Length: 209
Image (cartoon, rainbow, N blue to C red; front, side, top):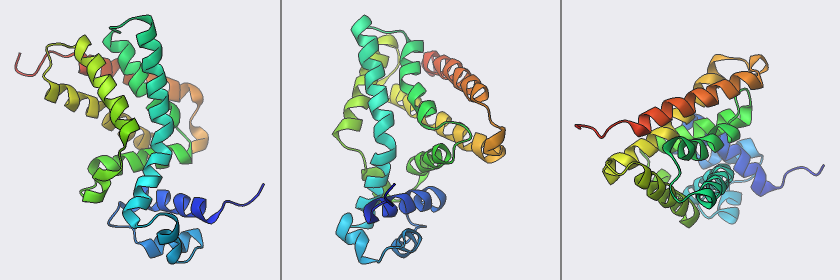
């Protein structure tokens, strides 16, 4: 197998460091040192540190977004108004599938998502594109039909909660157990628990009702 090219090496190094230290806590020099590249390589391949972050984020998010889109397509092909439990499964399931317990890559993806959620750097807010926006809007519309009493603001808050709960759980699982001790059955159990919990959270009455 051929070694990874310079662009891939930079992406791998940046993903690792952004996940561990956040955007502002990661320097371009640290990325290129870890990648074994020169400083100019980031500008050549990505243009800027912010654009590198966007590329890193899209690389880990794209498979999740594609699976979420496919899951919703399957539900809507069967019924125009899927129940909340099936919408949660289609939206949250890919997060577990792409961040398996006991997998270093999955743990790094989890930490990166937590960074995206919590990092105050403005650059972290600018990575999304039309594909992510379209999937988000389609799920918001589907959840809105299933939960018509929720305000758009509270509905979006709860959807963000799905992402946060799943990512934090994956990080916690990785940090508490050596990868070799985690079985696929344990990961599947956590997936079922999360779907049950998140379905209940999404289905709760509107706040103040």
